Amino acid sequence: MPQKDKPTLAVWKFASCDGCQLSLLDCEDELLAVASALQIANFMEASSSVIKGPYDLSLVEGSITTPHDAERIHAIRRASKFLVTIGACATSGGIQALRNFKDVREFTTIVYARPEYIETLNKSTPIADHVRVDFELRGCPINKRQLLEVVSAFLNGRKPNTPPHSVCVECKLRGTVCVMVAHGTPCLGPVTQAGCGAICPAYDRGCYGCFGPKETPNTKSLAASWSSLGVTEEDLVRTFRGFNAFAEAFRKESDAHER
Amino acid sequence: MRMSGKTIKVDYLARVEGEGALQIKTRGQQVTDVKLRIFEPPRFFEAFLRGRLFSEAPDITARICGICPVAYQMSACHAMEDALGARVEGPLRELRRLLYCGE
Image (cartoon, rainbow over all chains, first blue to last red; front, side):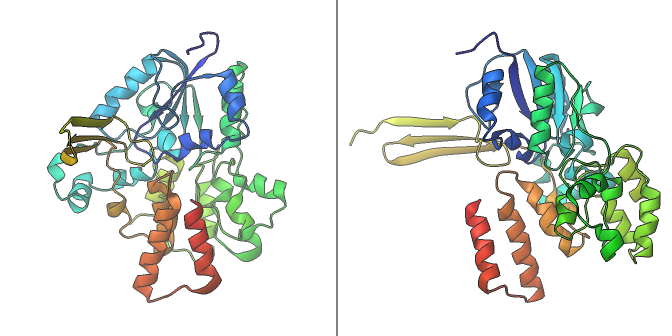
């Protein structure tokens, strides 16, 4: 039964993998608390029962890649009081934005036997390119603690506290020895926004940029450090073209190394 | 046996990545019509994986599906092992099996 006293939550999907919205269901210990504070009104991965909008809080996953979706996002914006994008797809275009650097028609012909059935745009773009977004949560996938922080901030009418500093700070906080300085392992940590908890360096692996560019990233300087470790220009192009390839700082750096 | 017609209609298949809808019509024990509609936009993994370093494939293919990323990661690993003629045995293989079954 709809409870009108509680704010309503809607979860929407565009081109994506479902992983970010599942982070909400992964909040096993906190899910009951979330459900007691919010009326889950539209969340197909959780329930087929849908309550009509408008919605107080909309979480939007995925990027815009079709003419139909470019229309649909406007209807969702109109039906939402507060709209938060969740994850790299919704915030920067996602891994499917690798098409943005190539010819999507060629992509369609090599993947599909009958390309004439496929309707797709030349570029995969973030939600903020289409409608006003109230908050963007980074990550591929997002961190569920940060998602709870966003929901909690919304419920309490405050700004979410998601630090814009680099993954390096998280390595220092957890006492991880720098993989780049100590082992010579190329790492995107210095230019990547924190949020994951610096998982990869803790396992002796370089960061590969799931949370996208941090504020004021010095990608040029980091690329020079990578070059001194023997990384080629071609490798640098690929490195910055990952899950956040179309985020401006990473896009520009990858373009700078492309011949 | 009574020959009654029945339609099973699922407008949204939630437990697979790649949004879709399914409609099955039956008459008695016979399936008379099946319609599967996939409305997930194409993402072109097969196309943009070309030219990537082989070691990047498991990280990229994991993003095909957030419900079952291990299936895609493992497929990518197996494909590369096949290409390189490598065979993973023993505890490592068992560990991977456990990870996959756990998913």
